[in-house]
Length: 458
Image (cartoon, rainbow, N blue to C red; front, side, top):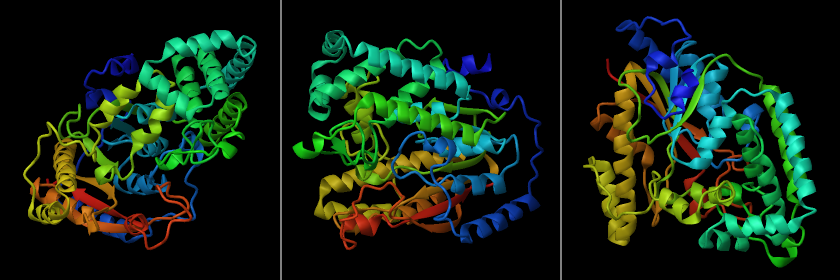
Protein backbone atom coordinates (compact mmCIF):
# COMPACT_ATOMS: atom_id res chain seq x y z
CA UNK A 1 0.00 0.00 0.00
CA UNK A 2 2.84 2.34 0.91
CA UNK A 3 4.62 1.79 -2.38
CA UNK A 4 1.43 2.43 -4.32
CA UNK A 5 1.00 5.80 -2.60
CA UNK A 6 4.60 6.82 -3.38
CA UNK A 7 4.14 5.98 -7.05
CA UNK A 8 1.39 8.58 -7.27
CA UNK A 9 4.07 11.28 -6.81
CA UNK A 10 2.58 12.45 -3.50
CA UNK A 11 5.09 14.10 -1.19
CA UNK A 12 6.51 11.22 0.91
CA UNK A 13 6.55 11.82 4.63
CA UNK A 14 9.52 10.58 6.61
CA UNK A 15 7.20 8.91 9.09
CA UNK A 16 6.01 6.70 6.23
CA UNK A 17 9.48 5.98 4.89
CA UNK A 18 10.75 4.98 8.34
CA UNK A 19 7.69 3.08 9.50
CA UNK A 20 9.45 -0.29 9.68
CA UNK A 21 12.41 0.88 11.78
CA UNK A 22 12.89 1.74 15.42
CA UNK A 23 13.49 5.45 15.98
CA UNK A 24 17.01 6.25 17.19
CA UNK A 25 17.31 9.10 19.76
CA UNK A 26 19.35 12.11 18.54
CA UNK A 27 22.01 13.37 20.93
CA UNK A 28 23.34 16.93 20.62
CA UNK A 29 26.43 18.53 22.12
CA UNK A 30 29.21 16.00 22.59
CA UNK A 31 27.96 13.94 19.64
CA UNK A 32 28.81 16.79 17.26
CA UNK A 33 32.47 16.59 18.22
CA UNK A 34 32.41 12.87 17.56
CA UNK A 35 31.02 13.49 14.07
CA UNK A 36 33.70 16.07 13.28
CA UNK A 37 36.47 13.75 14.46
CA UNK A 38 35.01 10.92 12.41
CA UNK A 39 34.82 13.17 9.33
CA UNK A 40 38.45 14.19 9.72
CA UNK A 41 39.48 10.54 9.78
CA UNK A 42 37.30 9.60 6.82
CA UNK A 43 38.49 12.49 4.65
CA UNK A 44 42.13 11.66 5.32
CA UNK A 45 41.73 8.09 4.05
CA UNK A 46 42.35 6.87 0.51
CA UNK A 47 39.05 7.61 -1.22
CA UNK A 48 40.12 6.34 -4.64
CA UNK A 49 39.23 2.66 -4.06
CA UNK A 50 41.31 1.75 -7.10
CA UNK A 51 41.64 -1.92 -6.16
CA UNK A 52 37.96 -2.38 -5.32
CA UNK A 53 35.34 -3.64 -7.80
CA UNK A 54 33.26 -0.78 -9.21
CA UNK A 55 30.61 -2.65 -11.18
CA UNK A 56 29.73 -5.47 -8.85
CA UNK A 57 26.17 -6.65 -8.22
CA UNK A 58 23.38 -4.31 -9.26
CA UNK A 59 25.89 -1.56 -10.00
CA UNK A 60 26.65 -3.54 -13.16
CA UNK A 61 23.16 -3.26 -14.67
CA UNK A 62 23.89 -0.31 -16.97
CA UNK A 63 26.82 1.94 -17.87
CA UNK A 64 26.78 5.48 -16.49
CA UNK A 65 29.45 8.17 -16.94
CA UNK A 66 31.47 9.61 -14.05
CA UNK A 67 29.75 7.60 -11.31
CA UNK A 68 31.63 7.29 -8.05
CA UNK A 69 32.62 3.83 -6.76
CA UNK A 70 30.03 2.23 -4.45
CA UNK A 71 32.65 1.93 -1.73
CA UNK A 72 32.71 5.73 -1.36
CA UNK A 73 29.09 6.28 -0.25
CA UNK A 74 29.19 3.03 1.72
CA UNK A 75 32.17 4.24 3.76
CA UNK A 76 30.29 7.37 4.86
CA UNK A 77 26.96 5.58 5.29
CA UNK A 78 28.41 2.95 7.62
CA UNK A 79 30.46 5.48 9.57
CA UNK A 80 27.95 8.31 9.98
CA UNK A 81 24.54 6.59 10.17
CA UNK A 82 22.78 3.71 11.92
CA UNK A 83 20.41 1.06 10.53
CA UNK A 84 17.04 2.62 9.86
CA UNK A 85 18.43 6.10 9.18
CA UNK A 86 17.41 8.00 6.05
CA UNK A 87 20.14 8.49 3.43
CA UNK A 88 19.48 10.89 0.55
CA UNK A 89 21.00 11.48 -2.87
CA UNK A 90 19.23 14.52 -4.38
CA UNK A 91 20.97 13.97 -7.76
CA UNK A 92 20.88 10.19 -7.72
CA UNK A 93 22.15 9.43 -11.23
CA UNK A 94 22.66 5.67 -11.47
CA UNK A 95 21.43 5.18 -7.90
CA UNK A 96 24.74 4.14 -6.32
CA UNK A 97 24.12 5.86 -2.98
CA UNK A 98 20.58 4.48 -2.66
CA UNK A 99 21.69 0.91 -3.48
CA UNK A 100 24.45 1.11 -0.88
CA UNK A 101 22.06 2.57 1.69
CA UNK A 102 19.54 -0.24 1.41
CA UNK A 103 22.27 -2.89 1.31
CA UNK A 104 23.37 -1.67 4.77
CA UNK A 105 19.83 -1.65 6.24
CA UNK A 106 19.35 2.11 5.87
CA UNK A 107 16.50 3.71 3.97
CA UNK A 108 17.70 5.17 0.70
CA UNK A 109 15.88 7.83 -1.26
CA UNK A 110 17.08 9.44 -4.47
CA UNK A 111 15.74 12.11 -6.80
CA UNK A 112 16.57 12.87 -10.42
CA UNK A 113 14.96 14.40 -13.50
CA UNK A 114 16.78 12.34 -16.15
CA UNK A 115 14.40 9.62 -17.45
CA UNK A 116 17.12 7.02 -17.95
CA UNK A 117 18.66 7.70 -14.53
CA UNK A 118 15.22 7.20 -12.98
CA UNK A 119 14.77 3.89 -14.79
CA UNK A 120 18.24 2.67 -13.80
CA UNK A 121 17.71 3.62 -10.16
CA UNK A 122 14.23 2.12 -10.01
CA UNK A 123 15.36 -1.23 -11.43
CA UNK A 124 18.40 -1.35 -9.16
CA UNK A 125 16.29 -0.79 -6.04
CA UNK A 126 13.37 -3.09 -6.93
CA UNK A 127 13.40 -6.63 -5.54
CA UNK A 128 12.62 -9.17 -8.26
CA UNK A 129 12.43 -12.93 -8.50
CA UNK A 130 15.45 -13.88 -10.67
CA UNK A 131 13.72 -17.05 -11.89
CA UNK A 132 10.68 -15.10 -13.07
CA UNK A 133 12.88 -12.49 -14.75
CA UNK A 134 14.94 -15.15 -16.51
CA UNK A 135 11.79 -16.86 -17.77
CA UNK A 136 10.41 -13.61 -19.18
CA UNK A 137 13.73 -12.67 -20.76
CA UNK A 138 13.83 -15.98 -22.64
CA UNK A 139 10.21 -15.60 -23.70
CA UNK A 140 10.84 -12.06 -24.97
CA UNK A 141 13.88 -13.16 -26.99
CA UNK A 142 12.04 -16.14 -28.51
CA UNK A 143 9.00 -14.04 -29.40
CA UNK A 144 11.27 -11.39 -30.96
CA UNK A 145 13.00 -14.04 -33.09
CA UNK A 146 9.64 -15.33 -34.31
CA UNK A 147 8.45 -11.83 -35.19
CA UNK A 148 11.47 -11.43 -37.49
CA UNK A 149 9.76 -13.92 -39.79
CA UNK A 150 7.25 -11.16 -40.60
CA UNK A 151 9.51 -8.09 -40.98
CA UNK A 152 6.82 -6.13 -42.85
CA UNK A 153 4.76 -5.87 -39.66
CA UNK A 154 7.77 -4.60 -37.72
CA UNK A 155 8.58 -2.13 -40.49
CA UNK A 156 5.04 -0.78 -40.35
CA UNK A 157 5.31 -0.35 -36.60
CA UNK A 158 8.60 1.51 -37.03
CA UNK A 159 6.99 3.90 -39.50
CA UNK A 160 4.13 4.80 -37.15
CA UNK A 161 5.89 4.75 -33.77
CA UNK A 162 8.09 7.85 -34.09
CA UNK A 163 7.62 11.48 -35.06
CA UNK A 164 9.64 12.88 -37.97
CA UNK A 165 12.59 14.30 -35.98
CA UNK A 166 12.94 11.15 -33.88
CA UNK A 167 12.75 8.99 -37.00
CA UNK A 168 15.56 11.00 -38.62
CA UNK A 169 17.70 10.53 -35.50
CA UNK A 170 17.09 6.77 -35.48
CA UNK A 171 17.79 6.42 -39.20
CA UNK A 172 21.13 8.21 -38.80
CA UNK A 173 22.37 6.21 -35.80
CA UNK A 174 20.87 2.74 -36.30
CA UNK A 175 21.12 0.38 -39.28
CA UNK A 176 17.90 -0.87 -40.88
CA UNK A 177 18.47 -4.42 -39.63
CA UNK A 178 19.09 -3.22 -36.08
CA UNK A 179 15.96 -1.10 -36.13
CA UNK A 180 13.88 -4.17 -37.07
CA UNK A 181 15.47 -6.24 -34.29
CA UNK A 182 15.01 -3.54 -31.66
CA UNK A 183 11.39 -3.13 -32.70
CA UNK A 184 10.91 -6.88 -32.34
CA UNK A 185 12.37 -6.83 -28.82
CA UNK A 186 10.30 -3.81 -27.80
CA UNK A 187 7.07 -5.33 -29.05
CA UNK A 188 7.81 -8.46 -27.05
CA UNK A 189 8.68 -6.49 -23.90
CA UNK A 190 5.41 -4.57 -24.17
CA UNK A 191 3.53 -7.84 -23.71
CA UNK A 192 5.13 -8.56 -20.30
CA UNK A 193 2.45 -8.15 -17.63
CA UNK A 194 4.61 -7.52 -14.55
CA UNK A 195 5.56 -3.82 -14.70
CA UNK A 196 8.73 -4.26 -12.63
CA UNK A 197 9.95 -7.12 -14.83
CA UNK A 198 9.06 -5.04 -17.88
CA UNK A 199 11.23 -2.19 -16.56
CA UNK A 200 14.10 -4.63 -15.95
CA UNK A 201 13.89 -5.79 -19.57
CA UNK A 202 13.64 -2.22 -20.88
CA UNK A 203 16.80 -1.38 -18.96
CA UNK A 204 18.45 -4.45 -20.43
CA UNK A 205 17.56 -3.18 -23.90
CA UNK A 206 18.97 0.25 -23.03
CA UNK A 207 22.18 -1.38 -21.78
CA UNK A 208 22.96 -2.85 -25.21
CA UNK A 209 22.53 0.59 -26.79
CA UNK A 210 24.24 2.97 -24.32
CA UNK A 211 27.65 1.35 -23.92
CA UNK A 212 31.26 2.42 -23.77
CA UNK A 213 31.96 0.20 -26.78
CA UNK A 214 30.36 -2.63 -28.69
CA UNK A 215 26.75 -1.47 -28.62
CA UNK A 216 24.12 -2.13 -31.29
CA UNK A 217 23.97 1.42 -32.64
CA UNK A 218 26.32 2.96 -35.20
CA UNK A 219 27.81 5.14 -32.44
CA UNK A 220 30.82 4.46 -30.31
CA UNK A 221 31.77 5.95 -26.93
CA UNK A 222 28.19 6.44 -25.76
CA UNK A 223 29.29 5.41 -22.26
CA UNK A 224 31.43 8.56 -22.22
CA UNK A 225 28.60 10.73 -23.65
CA UNK A 226 30.77 11.49 -26.70
CA UNK A 227 29.02 9.65 -29.56
CA UNK A 228 30.84 9.38 -32.86
CA UNK A 229 29.48 7.52 -35.86
CA UNK A 230 31.32 4.40 -36.93
CA UNK A 231 32.89 4.52 -40.36
CA UNK A 232 31.36 2.34 -43.04
CA UNK A 233 33.90 -0.45 -42.62
CA UNK A 234 33.34 -0.87 -38.90
CA UNK A 235 29.60 -0.41 -39.23
CA UNK A 236 29.34 -3.60 -41.32
CA UNK A 237 30.40 -5.60 -38.27
CA UNK A 238 27.60 -4.41 -36.00
CA UNK A 239 26.25 -6.74 -33.34
CA UNK A 240 22.85 -8.36 -33.77
CA UNK A 241 20.45 -6.94 -31.18
CA UNK A 242 18.53 -10.03 -30.06
CA UNK A 243 21.60 -12.14 -29.12
CA UNK A 244 23.09 -9.10 -27.37
CA UNK A 245 19.82 -8.63 -25.46
CA UNK A 246 19.90 -12.26 -24.31
CA UNK A 247 23.52 -12.00 -23.17
CA UNK A 248 22.90 -8.75 -21.31
CA UNK A 249 19.79 -10.12 -19.61
CA UNK A 250 21.76 -13.16 -18.39
CA UNK A 251 24.55 -10.88 -17.15
CA UNK A 252 22.15 -8.61 -15.23
CA UNK A 253 20.31 -11.56 -13.70
CA UNK A 254 23.66 -12.98 -12.57
CA UNK A 255 24.56 -9.60 -11.06
CA UNK A 256 21.23 -9.54 -9.22
CA UNK A 257 21.92 -12.97 -7.72
CA UNK A 258 25.41 -11.95 -6.58
CA UNK A 259 24.18 -8.92 -4.68
CA UNK A 260 21.12 -10.60 -3.18
CA UNK A 261 18.20 -8.79 -1.62
CA UNK A 262 17.61 -6.55 1.37
CA UNK A 263 14.70 -5.91 3.70
CA UNK A 264 15.47 -2.18 3.73
CA UNK A 265 13.52 0.25 1.56
CA UNK A 266 14.81 2.25 -1.39
CA UNK A 267 12.99 4.88 -3.41
CA UNK A 268 14.00 6.56 -6.66
CA UNK A 269 11.61 9.42 -7.45
CA UNK A 270 11.33 12.23 -9.95
CA UNK A 271 12.42 15.44 -8.29
CA UNK A 272 14.57 18.54 -8.64
CA UNK A 273 17.53 18.88 -6.26
CA UNK A 274 16.84 22.61 -6.04
CA UNK A 275 13.37 22.01 -4.56
CA UNK A 276 12.98 18.60 -2.97
CA UNK A 277 9.59 17.10 -2.07
CA UNK A 278 10.74 16.30 1.49
CA UNK A 279 10.00 17.65 4.94
CA UNK A 280 12.57 19.86 6.64
CA UNK A 281 15.00 18.35 9.17
CA UNK A 282 14.38 14.74 8.16
CA UNK A 283 17.55 13.38 6.51
CA UNK A 284 20.38 11.69 8.42
CA UNK A 285 23.01 11.80 5.66
CA UNK A 286 23.40 13.10 2.11
CA UNK A 287 25.91 11.58 -0.30
CA UNK A 288 25.80 12.98 -3.83
CA UNK A 289 27.82 14.06 -6.83
CA UNK A 290 26.57 17.07 -8.82
CA UNK A 291 27.11 17.34 -12.58
CA UNK A 292 30.04 19.31 -13.96
CA UNK A 293 29.46 22.85 -15.20
CA UNK A 294 28.74 23.64 -18.87
CA UNK A 295 27.71 20.11 -19.87
CA UNK A 296 31.26 18.80 -19.49
CA UNK A 297 29.52 15.43 -19.17
CA UNK A 298 26.38 15.64 -21.29
CA UNK A 299 24.19 12.81 -20.03
CA UNK A 300 21.30 13.39 -22.41
CA UNK A 301 23.59 13.35 -25.40
CA UNK A 302 24.03 9.61 -24.83
CA UNK A 303 20.83 8.74 -22.98
CA UNK A 304 18.58 9.78 -25.85
CA UNK A 305 19.95 6.86 -27.91
CA UNK A 306 17.90 4.47 -25.80
CA UNK A 307 15.19 6.85 -24.58
CA UNK A 308 13.85 7.32 -28.11
CA UNK A 309 13.24 3.57 -28.22
CA UNK A 310 11.50 3.75 -24.85
CA UNK A 311 8.89 6.16 -26.17
CA UNK A 312 10.36 9.67 -25.85
CA UNK A 313 10.67 12.17 -28.68
CA UNK A 314 13.96 13.86 -29.55
CA UNK A 315 12.51 17.37 -29.25
CA UNK A 316 11.09 16.62 -25.80
CA UNK A 317 14.45 15.25 -24.64
CA UNK A 318 16.22 18.37 -25.90
CA UNK A 319 13.81 20.54 -23.93
CA UNK A 320 14.22 18.35 -20.85
CA UNK A 321 18.01 18.62 -21.09
CA UNK A 322 17.83 22.41 -20.78
CA UNK A 323 16.64 21.99 -17.18
CA UNK A 324 19.61 19.88 -16.09
CA UNK A 325 22.06 21.36 -13.60
CA UNK A 326 25.13 22.53 -15.49
CA UNK A 327 23.27 23.15 -18.76
CA UNK A 328 24.30 26.09 -20.95
CA UNK A 329 20.85 27.55 -21.67
CA UNK A 330 20.64 31.10 -20.28
CA UNK A 331 17.40 32.61 -21.57
CA UNK A 332 14.65 32.96 -19.00
CA UNK A 333 16.93 31.86 -16.18
CA UNK A 334 16.85 33.32 -12.65
CA UNK A 335 20.30 33.89 -11.16
CA UNK A 336 21.24 33.95 -7.49
CA UNK A 337 23.50 36.50 -5.76
CA UNK A 338 26.92 34.85 -5.50
CA UNK A 339 29.82 35.10 -3.09
CA UNK A 340 33.13 36.74 -3.91
CA UNK A 341 35.18 33.81 -5.24
CA UNK A 342 32.61 32.61 -7.81
CA UNK A 343 32.12 36.23 -8.89
CA UNK A 344 35.86 36.70 -9.45
CA UNK A 345 36.16 33.53 -11.52
CA UNK A 346 33.03 34.35 -13.54
CA UNK A 347 34.40 37.86 -14.19
CA UNK A 348 37.70 36.46 -15.52
CA UNK A 349 35.91 34.04 -17.86
CA UNK A 350 33.39 36.67 -18.99
CA UNK A 351 36.20 38.95 -20.20
CA UNK A 352 37.25 36.18 -22.59
CA UNK A 353 33.84 34.67 -23.38
CA UNK A 354 30.70 36.39 -22.02
CA UNK A 355 28.49 33.42 -22.79
CA UNK A 356 30.74 30.97 -20.92
CA UNK A 357 30.75 33.38 -18.00
CA UNK A 358 26.95 33.31 -18.02
CA UNK A 359 26.93 29.52 -18.11
CA UNK A 360 29.16 29.36 -15.05
CA UNK A 361 26.96 31.93 -13.30
CA UNK A 362 23.98 29.68 -13.94
CA UNK A 363 25.86 26.67 -12.52
CA UNK A 364 26.83 28.40 -9.28
CA UNK A 365 23.30 29.81 -8.98
CA UNK A 366 21.94 26.28 -9.28
CA UNK A 367 24.40 24.94 -6.74
CA UNK A 368 23.51 27.75 -4.33
CA UNK A 369 19.92 26.55 -4.38
CA UNK A 370 20.98 22.91 -4.11
CA UNK A 371 23.14 23.54 -1.03
CA UNK A 372 20.40 25.66 0.54
CA UNK A 373 17.94 22.80 -0.03
CA UNK A 374 20.36 20.26 1.41
CA UNK A 375 20.59 22.35 4.55
CA UNK A 376 16.80 22.50 4.81
CA UNK A 377 16.23 18.74 4.65
CA UNK A 378 19.20 17.69 6.81
CA UNK A 379 18.68 17.10 10.50
CA UNK A 380 20.72 19.48 12.71
CA UNK A 381 24.25 18.20 13.23
CA UNK A 382 24.05 15.89 10.20
CA UNK A 383 26.39 15.71 7.21
CA UNK A 384 26.18 16.24 3.45
CA UNK A 385 28.99 14.61 1.43
CA UNK A 386 29.33 16.31 -1.97
CA UNK A 387 31.78 14.85 -4.49
CA UNK A 388 32.75 17.41 -7.13
CA UNK A 389 35.25 17.87 -9.91
CA UNK A 390 36.55 21.11 -11.29
CA UNK A 391 36.52 22.21 -14.93
CA UNK A 392 38.48 24.45 -17.24
CA UNK A 393 36.50 27.12 -19.08
CA UNK A 394 38.51 29.05 -21.65
CA UNK A 395 41.65 27.87 -19.87
CA UNK A 396 40.51 29.12 -16.44
CA UNK A 397 39.93 26.73 -13.54
CA UNK A 398 36.36 27.03 -12.24
CA UNK A 399 37.66 26.06 -8.75
CA UNK A 400 34.38 24.27 -8.09
CA UNK A 401 35.47 22.84 -4.73
CA UNK A 402 36.53 26.19 -3.27
CA UNK A 403 33.49 27.98 -4.67
CA UNK A 404 31.06 25.45 -3.20
CA UNK A 405 32.77 25.68 0.19
CA UNK A 406 32.29 29.46 0.11
CA UNK A 407 28.67 29.14 -1.05
CA UNK A 408 28.02 26.61 1.72
CA UNK A 409 29.18 29.13 4.31
CA UNK A 410 26.86 31.74 2.78
CA UNK A 411 23.79 29.48 3.11
CA UNK A 412 24.73 28.41 6.65
CA UNK A 413 25.95 24.97 5.67
CA UNK A 414 29.63 25.18 6.63
CA UNK A 415 32.20 22.77 5.26
CA UNK A 416 33.97 20.75 7.97
CA UNK A 417 36.67 19.36 5.69
CA UNK A 418 37.73 18.41 2.16
CA UNK A 419 39.15 15.11 0.97
CA UNK A 420 40.78 14.44 -2.41
CA UNK A 421 40.33 11.33 -4.49
CA UNK A 422 42.50 10.60 -7.51
CA UNK A 423 40.58 9.23 -10.47
CA UNK A 424 41.53 5.96 -12.13
CA UNK A 425 41.86 7.04 -15.76
CA UNK A 426 40.83 3.67 -17.19
CA UNK A 427 37.79 3.14 -14.93
CA UNK A 428 36.31 6.57 -14.35
CA UNK A 429 33.94 6.56 -17.38
CA UNK A 430 34.99 10.11 -18.24
CA UNK A 431 34.86 11.42 -21.80
CA UNK A 432 38.48 10.85 -22.82
CA UNK A 433 40.43 8.54 -25.08
CA UNK A 434 43.62 6.56 -24.54
CA UNK A 435 45.00 8.68 -27.40
CA UNK A 436 44.20 11.96 -25.61
CA UNK A 437 47.46 13.79 -24.75
CA UNK A 438 48.03 14.03 -21.00
CA UNK A 439 48.67 17.75 -21.47
CA UNK A 440 45.17 18.32 -22.90
CA UNK A 441 42.57 20.38 -21.07
CA UNK A 442 40.24 17.45 -20.51
CA UNK A 443 43.05 15.41 -18.94
CA UNK A 444 44.11 18.27 -16.69
CA UNK A 445 40.63 18.94 -15.38
CA UNK A 446 39.44 15.38 -14.78
CA UNK A 447 42.19 13.59 -12.88
CA UNK A 448 40.86 14.19 -9.37
CA UNK A 449 37.73 14.94 -7.42
CA UNK A 450 37.09 16.69 -4.14
CA UNK A 451 35.00 15.21 -1.32
CA UNK A 452 33.35 18.09 0.55
CA UNK A 453 31.83 17.42 3.96
CA UNK A 454 29.18 19.98 4.93
CA UNK A 455 27.62 19.91 8.39
CA UNK A 456 24.31 21.52 9.31
CA UNK A 457 24.68 23.53 12.52
CA UNK A 458 22.65 22.38 15.53
